[in-house]
Amino acid sequence: MRTLRPLSVGAVAAGIAVTLAACSSGSSSSSSTTTTQNPAQATAAITTSWTGFFDGGNPDSKAKLLLLQNNGKLTAVYNKAYATPLAAMTSTKVTSVAVLPASQCQQAAVPSPCAKVSYDLINRQTGAPLLAGQTGYAVNLNGKWLVSQNTFCALIGLEGTQCPA
Image 1 (spheres, rainbow, N blue to C red):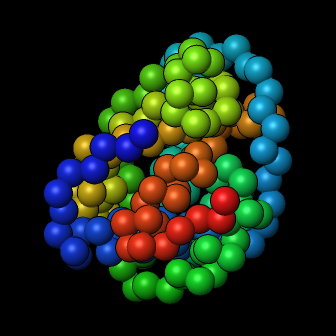
Image 2: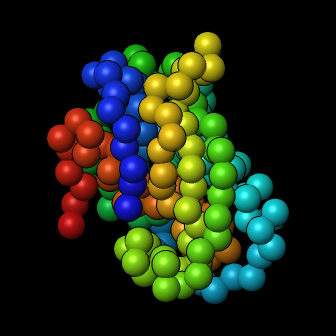
């Protein structure tokens, strides 16, 4: 599912901070809609969603939450683990996007249509990587590309927090 490389405690904390700061309360449908989108359009839409979700400089958590799959289900996790000043210092750089066939989405435990996203969590101020070379998933729900629940849960899992089943 995700490939994590050895990291310092500070880098992990910063990565978790951006993830937690990106959420608050809200809900989102988890039903998937089949969509046909060319790779360039999908890449642009996914990159926009990921950079918006992981933008630690944007305090609008409600807008960010709309970019997360099953955000209503994840509200309590966010509220439990929220609050870190490192969140404002983080952002993401999407390095590649690959829209996957339905069978690979199923193997990744995400709804189809989906895409595999390679990304770095970075320090907004310096551009230095905090969590480099990460892999996650985007899902297309109701025509909108979102950060997958399993990507979010893997990130907060680095600090020992579990997402609801």
